[in-house]
Length: 297
Image 1 (tube, rainbow, N blue to C red):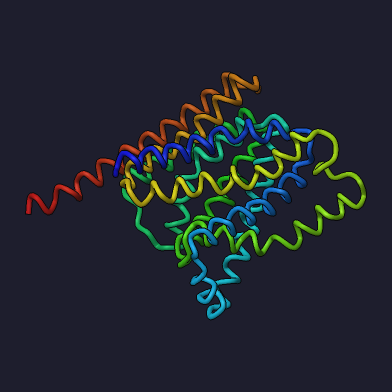
Image 2 (image 1 turned 90 degrees about the horizontal axis):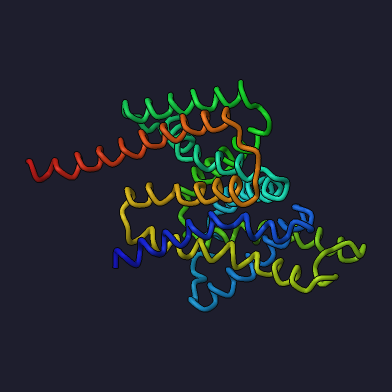
């Protein structure tokens, strides 16, 4: 059972790590149009899955708690910002900056937990954050450029995770509600493109149309794998596996798409990787200590 969970979670992270290849195949389509199709077809896939599983009881919960709908309006907006930034960055030659955003995302999550959930940080976590801050500061001073991409992705996804952490809906139900919130504006935008004759859907290359529809599958598929895996493996395992996605993105950006990666960038990334190593190692040792306490008692 645990091996299946590891394979499922790893499959999700690998799929997310290879996502730049998919968006690159749609580079001829404007990012906002890709985003609209991703919303529309993600909702379609999610609804089919819910129909197969007959999971509609959660709609009553949303109906009886309007504040829950408000929360998912906010998460939908955060998700749209994150998705648009990632698609734009990928198709404009900034996969490396995108990978940095997801490398520092775990540390952003720790800071958000400190600020909004009043979680207490251990000394090792403070050390990891300090090292990461030094790396980011070095990149800002010596590289500059488009680090706003990294911070936009890390902060939007961190805030999204914070709000979803305390929401009483599963990943598939939550995604369905978020895409339902965004459905009308996305559909209006795409139909306006079709009426003007400038939309990519069903115009020209059939492969483009297929890939636009497939955006729903590449969105919902990894989420389902992740939900399956997360229920069957430890948080320590997930904490290690989560770096697979940005690592694959980084490798694609540098070695496949030949994005610029200077010595100064390498030095800054190395410091941030050191921070992640400290953070992961500290978390692993802390869990080992906690597991050993009942046995020693």
